Length: 462
Image: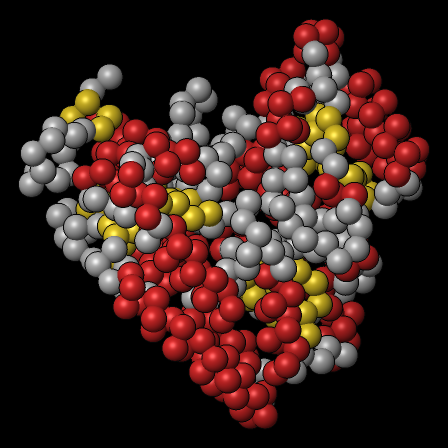
């Protein structure tokens, strides 16, 4: 294994990383900014990126009234149990984590009979309308026919039992997103898909949109729903936060799809445009500037002056209510440095803007599933010297956070221990948080959390 390349020659400490990773790491202003990204995971390698199965599970798990059955070892189901922490306004069935709990005997002789038995028991106990059956690595290896079992049981019980082809080794986390989107497409397929049916359906729409890529962590989907309702736009269904079977079946009634999480939902939005003629736009409700811009773009889509006036009135009111508070935080946080390592590129872009809004410099930005165009935008927003990296491992994160003297790391559950071991403040921008970070109220929550952790007196004693 070759170990070379040193990005910051101004530092006295000798720091290096694996040569094979050099194309996945860049430094703004020191070399070509584009990093190698969207590559398949290498079986057995250790990085912060989750697997295909995990990608599929995080997208589908917030569908509240579905049975989520993991066909594989118990560890896969345990690892992703209630992984999103999404809130529900109805059923709580999705909070269970079901598994076929495959053992050595199933690996040798096959697990299809065990899967059939598990489906039988779950249907008998819960009477669901919808069930997802996830494949895991071992299922892909031994070749259990998930499609055949699901089709057989679906016909037997007259419900939708959808196989999710998510064996962990068949790509990367983004492949899991696509597997989940393919599963959703099977649900939302309307009975009438002729051109005339689509035209008639759209003519009955009254400013109704779908909200893709919000998983309703800490009620965020409901906050955005409130903003849009106030200016005269209704959300048809959210994919997949607080979604249920009946709501998903109405998804093709929308006039527009808006996408918060680009990494997980752009594929689905493109397919819905191709199949049902529903246009889409990327938006972000993270941070003040992105929230304002997103509301204006959505309102502008409907080409209605009254709608746009209501939008401006809402923005002015909300902004005036939080301006003084954010200004105080900005004064307190001037000079601090932040490192970012999150799932998708679009979230990283919004976070860079949010830190700019509160006076914090971003010195490292990384993602698990960022795409080329997202890394181009990240490079444009980053200041000179910022390290940009894709699919990083803990060693690299430690190296660059230390070199750049970051005061704070923003990440998910896997990054938290690393930050605390380094004696660096941490905020969770992923699944475990209990307070909303979207919209105007989210911008204040974000600044409050950053201030409380970065300025905590505990760091004097570490």
